[in-house]
Length: 132
Image (cartoon, rainbow, N blue to C red):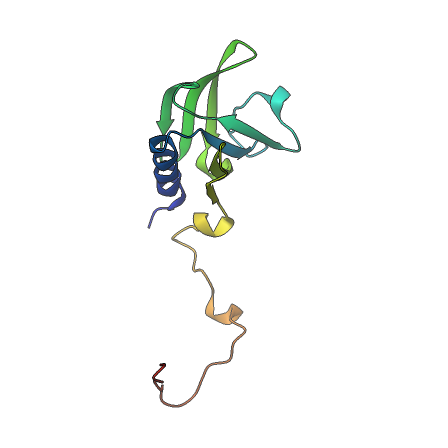
């Protein structure tokens, strides 16, 4: 399966905009391929206002997000790989989500290899318990 993070990103973006709020992205500015204004990066991260009124040519793709924005009156083209996006939230109330490494698991890799499992295998027949 493909990673779910780009789909969740688009859903949260649409939800925030539909509620007349301002979507912000928290981006790992040091992630390879990330093209953001480095003069605005703090502690390796940048927070970007990605509202429709603040951006142009916004494309929320499966592998990257690209858009045009102005910084200090200077037009810039930004490119952010989806894996570099750490969170999306609404400026006004903080509603949104934080993306974790688990949201970006490669489908080719098992989530937990059998030899890495720490829990011992249970022996015998399985049982069901009624919970009231």
